Image (cartoon, rainbow, N blue to C red; front, top):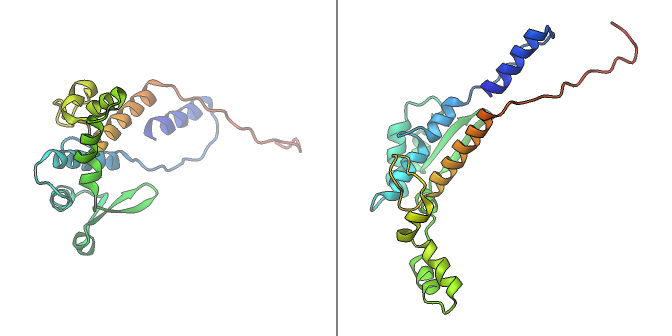
Length: 190
């Protein structure tokens, strides 16, 4: 937001185009809450997925402890009791239920399904199963963990974070162009 809107406002000033200031929210603090290293929600979730015995409950306690002072984070006593939290996004407050976060973020194929695929007579299916194995995917996936080391297998959060950083890099490399819509003046009035 900052880059795009401020640059456009500066362009209007340079060209002497009359305009009224538009107040827009700065979302960097929300992005930091979600993705900042090492204290962002996604990074904590990734670490929990790599910790033996981690659960939604251990993740929630860690998150409540680390994010409690953040202006955009909310977890009142009711939310803590129900394992919920909320983030004040630019469009308003959004509440999240922590149930299933850790398991869904791991995105692992159940061992029974993996064993079944590995025992297939079809070579393609066996190859696919080998790719899905965490031990062999380290070499193939080369996605870095939030801590900077090679990850066992990228979690959903790490994949999302990687895609977000890639998108932001592409946006930073581009030059936005706008088409200015001129208001028709059919009455030829000044």
